[in-house]
Image 1: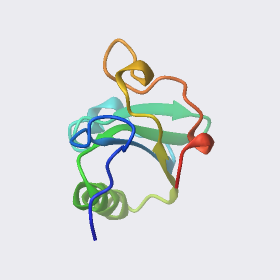
Image 2 (image 1 turned 90 degrees about the vertical axis):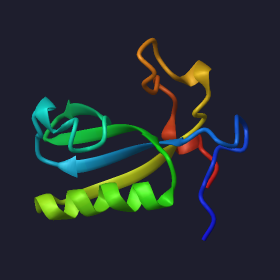
Image 3 (image 1 turned 30 degrees about the vertical axis):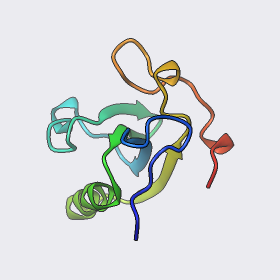
Length: 101
């Protein structure tokens, strides 16, 4: 299966994903989740950031499984262009429902 890249930007640029899990994780888990940003929303934790390819995405999902916490959603955020990234290189407030499948 080919890796997914953002066709609207550099084809070598990683795609940004948002992974929502049930429960709160402390910021100390950032390193274990390969530098993804952890945001607490209600009773959930949102892991957001660039993922190099499908193999890396599956690796992250295995880590969620290994924690034993419920996986609520995985959303590919578009676009992953510099305009959509904030000052620290993190996704801005783009609408994940407007992305192409």
